[in-house]
Every structure is written in structure tokens, then in C-alpha cells.
Image (cartoon, rainbow, N blue to C red; front, side, top):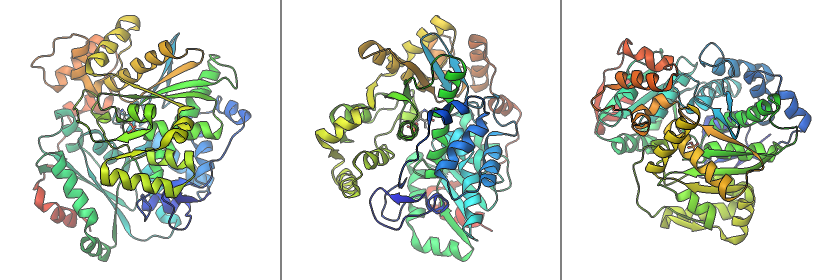
Length: 494
Ligand SMILES: *Cc1c(COP(=O)(O)O)cnc(C)c1O
């Protein structure tokens, strides 16, 4: 299987090459030239398999230039070895009316682990396969979750190193501790004096500096990024939609071939796009419900066909969905239209004017599969309370957004299909907001007291990775000026 750019230029590439490059040369995203399909027999066969075995089967259809031994090693490294605190890796909690696909049992308690545990291993294998001798240096600017998940994923992965910049005063104490205690021989974490934009702009400046890139190349180092436009970060996410279906079959909640709905809390459109690929492959999906917060640029787009980022930006209690440009939407537009010139035009308009209109016909074909709605912070908190009161289950804020929107869909449209709510973070990752929703007094508590208070209320075990921070050793103490990030990058390479 070959990969091409959504904007039409360049030669088709193997997946290994697409994963190493990350972004296509014309600024587009890599997409598979055609989407493989599977039979119902294939899907039924997944029910008896482990998560790792399910992953090998699904990945093997997209990463055809990897051998099955290579995929097996990557998958076992990513999901095995006791890194996930649940035997099912991505377990399904089944209630009478909905099921919840829990994607946060990995080392950093957020769904980013599902992809960021596998991407580094795919990349390292890709470097070997293609005979690339340079070392890859992953640069990340983070406002919290992605940095830690990327560090944990790349730690001690051959032929790679990772440097994470975070804003000195811009992350929560738990998030800072998660990063400052990071172990691994190829990792470094540096605080930037400034806010998230300062850190992000510094990283962008470095990526855009060709002369700096040359200097690194002399040391046999190439820069790359771990963000969600890389195909190697998207493809692992297709697996858990198949896995959820297989689990519903095994639990006899559905019969083979029954269509189901998924509701996905959406930011950069990566997670829900993975479900789109699953549907195109033949997984029986009826609707994909796209859930947003007050930054509902996607709800508006999916209702009206106009993408317009010219609007106010809100900071919400679901920070991972506070996004006005959803990069992965470009891939959907390509697959729906098959027209790279059109996609290129829309992306150019987005850049110039912040807006584009796909027209009635394209909108209609998107709406055959997608439905969208949003809730604000107050509704999100009310939903956490409702879910807790009804069934003593405590969702994180992002999951609660999805759950509330799933309810809207079932009330306003239909409830004939089994509904799966995709749960993207452990409630412990957003404990202050969750406790406030549950009306637990938390005034003046430090981060660890918050963990304890949530354990008391929820009865859920505190994730190991967070609990162990109480005693973990601080390993990274560097601080740098925002103008001097280049020097730190340079001193980190061998
Ligand atoms: C990243 C993230 C999302 C959004 O996922 P996208 O793939 O960007 O749409 C939702 N919830 C949480 C907790 C996340 O970390």
C-alpha cells in the first residue's frame, strides 16, 4: 500500500517513508492511496484475540511494507510489558444504554498513549528498514498532556531522542512533575521562560530554520515531530474501534453485522477520523457523533459546510479540545472528494481568510455518516454529576462532553443502535474540574490531596503513574530563555 499527499504532489511512498517524513512536501497530509476492506468473518475473528493480536491484524493492512515480525515487535513493545494497567488495554465498560471505550489505561492516563506508545516504535523500525542512518530528534512544545505521552513513548527507543519544551508557568503541578521526573537515556525536558505560545513559536522557528537543520545534519541528526498529523500516530487509533466492536460481539450486546454508533470528544479530528477509516474498511458503523466544547468550529462545519476559524477562543475545562484548526479534517475532505486540487484550494483559503465553504454536495456526503453537537462547561459539569448519580461512574471532563452529546443525539435523532462513548482521559488527569462538578470541596488542596479526594469519592484506584509522583526524583531542572532554545537543542545532540 502506498501513501500520497492530500494536496496531490509528490510520488507515492511506502508507509515507512511517510512515517519518517510526517508531513508531505507540499504541506499536505499523507493518506493511503486506497482503503483496505475486511469481511465480517475477519471482524468476528477478532473477538477471541488479545488487543495486541487485534492491532497486528488491523495495522498489517495499512503498513504493508512492515513484516509481520516487525509489527509484532512494535505492538508488543507499545502495549505489553505491564505498561497498561488493564489486561484489555482499551476495555469497554458496558452499561444498559451506552458503552464506554476507556482509552486511558496507558502510562500517562490519557488516550494519547494509544498512539504515542506505538508511533516511536514504528518510526525506529522505519529508520532501519529504509537504511536511514541519521538519528531522529523529536522536538515538542507542550501545554501539558502531549509532552508527557511523547516522552513516555520515545523513551529509550533506538535511533531517536526527544526534547520537550514546556512553559514554566503554563502547566499544572502534576503535569510538570510528570515531565520533570521522566526517565530514559534519550530524553530531555526544559522549562521555557514564557507562556505556551513562546514555547510553540520557538519550536516552529527551529523547524523553519534551514541553516540550523543543516548544522544538525552535519551531526547526523534530523528533526521530526510527534504531533497528530503523522500517519504513524493516526493508524494505531483505528484498532480500538474494531476492538470495541469485537468486545460488544463477545458480550452478545450486538449480533454480527449490527451497526453501532460512536461519539467522540474531538479536537484535532484525529480520533474520530480513525473511526471513519474503520467504517470505510467495513466495520458496521451507523453514525459518528462529533462532540465539541464551546470552541465548536467543527459542530458548525458539520452542520453548515462552512469552516470558519474567525471567532473567539475560549479556555474551557476540556483543554485538549480547545482548538480552532482541526488539522486532520483535511484527510476527511480528501477521502470524501478524492480531489486534491479542491483540498489544496480550501486549505489555501483557510490560510488566507481563515474560512472555506465545501458546498452542499460535499456537506451532504459528510452528513451521511457524521452528526455533531457541543456543550459548554456548565453542561459538562452537570453531565459528570448526572453520570455519577445514576451509576457511580466518574468520567473525565472530555468524556462527559461526549456523553452529553451522545444523549442529545439519542434524544433528537435515534437510539436504535448500540452507542459507544469514547473516553479519552482518566478523571484523575482533570481532578480539580471533576471534583468541582461533583461538589466536593477542594479549595486549597494540593495536587496530591486532590488525587486522594477523588479516590475517596470515586472508589477508583489512583493510576500508578500519578500516584508514584509523590516520591519520584526530579531529573530535569533546566530553564531557558525563549530566545535561546536553539542552543539547548544543539547541546542535546551528540
Ligand atoms: C487529544 C485529546 C482529545 C482530542 O482528540 P483529537 O484526536 O485531537 O480530536 C480529546 N480528549 C483528550 C483527553 C485528549 O487528550
